[in-house]
Figure (cartoon, rainbow, N blue to C red):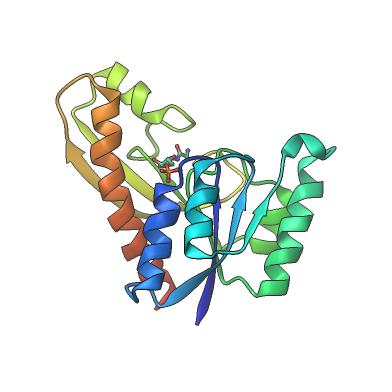
Length: 187
Ligand code: GAR
């Protein structure tokens, strides 16, 4: 069975969608590692519920990104991780992880890339008066939200409430991430 690592920094609803799909057989894989760069993040509670092994760290305890990425990559090597799924991991992946896991890392982003990259995509799109919103899953490379697109799904929204867009978008994210992981691992 394929082994997934999920990286998250916050609430972890995408982690939970992936873990639940692995648990009930909708994804033929297991979440073999959760990596979290925020001690205290809610995703850690979700991961304990599923019994997922956790690596949690504080970037400030390391002198540079390569130092913590080396530990993460060593752990993933030891476990035999096949695919890394970034799920609200609010950190740019550095050279250490890219050199060892490049081509095996995907990310989910709450806009129709290449529009609205970065951490405040939904707020910026609402500010622009966007009418067609969406979700993108893409391969991760050295650019910010810039790797080759794997899947996208759009939805119409004509309003000015970013929270509502987040709510609609997250339901789509959870489905699209499960479908896309399946498509990749069953190739
Ligand atoms: C998701 O909406 C994801 O698209 C976004 O963070 C959220 C995490 O939610 N990612 C980015 O903005 C990446 N640039 P979750 O913690 O509930 O899964």
